[in-house]
Structures are given as structure tokens and as C-alpha cells.
Amino acid sequence: MRNLLVAGGAGFIGSNFVHHILNTYPDYRVVVYDKLTYAGNLDNLRDYANDPRYAFEQGDICDAARVREVLQKHDIDTIVNFAAETHVDRSLTDPGSFIMTDVYGTHVLLEATKELGLERYHQVSTDEVYGEVLEGRTCEMAPIQTRSPYSASKAGGDLMVMAYFTSFQLPVTITRGSNNIGPYQYPEKVVPLWVTNALDDKPLPIYGDGLQMRDYQYVLDHCEGIDLVLHKGVPGEVYNLGTGTETRNIDVAHFILDLLGKPKSLIQYITDRPGHDRRYALSVEKVRALGWTSRHTSYQALENTVRWYVDNEWWWRKIKSGDLYREYYKQHYSGREVDAPKR
Image 1: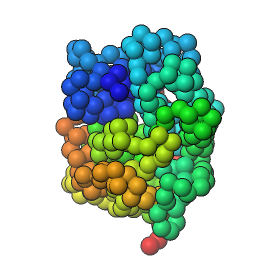
Image 2: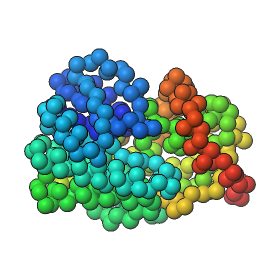
Image 3: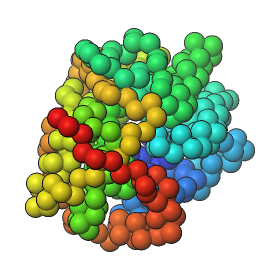
Image 4: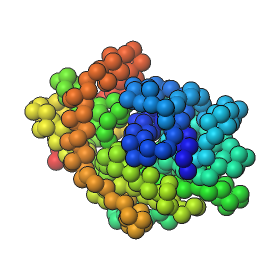
């Protein structure tokens, strides 16, 4: 594997993966294939704009002809698929676009992998396909129990990947990661939303009682795990990636406010979203047996993330000042304020 197509490589996790690969493997070439929807941003990759090992091709993974054209043009031998609609809130209002990208788009990439005889296809998935985990931890053999259009679409893509392994012996692997945080995350997601709102002394909207629990992992740790599975993972296998610890959302908000020296009065509770999973918790023993473990704790990841947004206002300010973002924010948060829950 030397010539990688990184689908969705201008997005949050995908662009961090491109950084990781180009910094780790001097003899690798990376082609980023991205539709450049609202969350795709070439600013994420500007450090490599003049690097001969990097190329960008705009396109939709649902466009079979364009996918094959790019794969053949660049002599691609490996696909790593980050391309997806990813935000649960948006999936509640527009589930159709999630089905198209996350399921049909995955099918298109798998067909191209099969027809062109590529060396490896890797699917980047999510712990949300397991549904909420109220007790214990979820291993890779746990049943899929999706609870949102987003998680259902990602599960559909995963099932398609495994079907191509069984039916066509395609060399595939899947990683299911916990919540990622770090540089270049679009500020619709909770941590960059709270950090940037706090910097502007605006309310931090918190769903329900704020006691939902998530495993927040640093995005570059996640990319290292994907790299390891890509090179050493067993075809046809799924690997969970996370820190193995969970943090309550309200505690994350408090940590951010304390780090920035902002008052707790900025916390604003809002009505909970439909089907909001209470807790995710992954067993990560399988990938640890390959030699990977997260290098940052959740709180170290949070601190690094906060510092990045403080230092890179140039990146997020123009996003949040745009009409598209402001309309999204109004649609999802306006008029939903409720009193703080009694503890």
C-alpha cells in the first residue's frame, strides 16, 4: 500500500489522517477525494498544498464514474473511507442524504475496489452503531442496535463492507471509533461548539440533564489506530478504537469553562434531542493486542483541543460568521431553553 485514496479527506478526521500519513510515511502518496460539502474544508490541508505527495480531487463517492476515473488516474491501491454524513442532529431532519452517502456511497467504493482489484479497503465507522450501552463495554461482536438515522446509515455501510468480504473475498477492515475531538472539527459538534461559544461569552447549549457519557479521544490517536489496523489488521475484522473511559457531558462543559476562565452561568440547558443515547462504552482489547493504545486521556485531549481553537481563530471564525452556520444554529438551538435540572 503506497497510493492511498482518502475519501472525505477534507473533513475533520480525514484531514487529520492525511496529516498523520504524510508525516509518518515519506514514500506514500495521498489523494484526497472530497465533495466539499459544508464540513469539507481545504484549509484543513493547506500545509500540503505544494507537496508533490499530495493531490486533491473533488467528487462525490456516489458518482461511480468519477470514482473510477480518479482511482485509475492516480494508480490507487488502497481506499480509506472517511466520507460520510456524520452529525446526528442533521440526520433527524434530513435522513435521506445520510442513506445516500453512508450506504450507497460505500457500495460505490466497494464496487470500484472489487472491479479494479485494489489491495485494501478500510471503512471508518463509529461506536454509535452499537446503540447506547448502559452497563459494561461493547466488543466488536456485539449486535448492532442503532437509534438514529445517522447510526443506522453507518451500520448499513458496515454491513455492506462485510457482505463484500464474505461474497467477494474483498480485503476489507473496519474501525469503529468513539467521539473524536481535536483540530479542524466543524463547530456543529459539541466540543468545538462549546469552546468557540465560550470564547465569545455565548451560552453553551446542553441537551437534557447533561449526564450523557461519551468516550472523547484525541483525533490523532484515532488516526494512529486506523493506520495500525490498515497495515496490520486482519481482513474481514472489525476493531474498536477509543480511550476506554467515559466522561459526562456536563463535566466536559465545566472543564472547558474552567480552562478558559469563563463562568458556569454560560451553561444553558435545552430540550433533549429524540433518541439521545445515554452512554457509549467500547472494549478496546482487540486493537490493543495489535499494539495500539490511545496516547492521550480524554482530559488531555480536551485540553489540546481547547488550546487549538484558542490559537486558530482564523479557522473557525469565518465558519461561524457565515449565513449557513448561523441558520443551522438558529434552527437547532433557538427557543429550546429550559430550566436547569434539579440534581
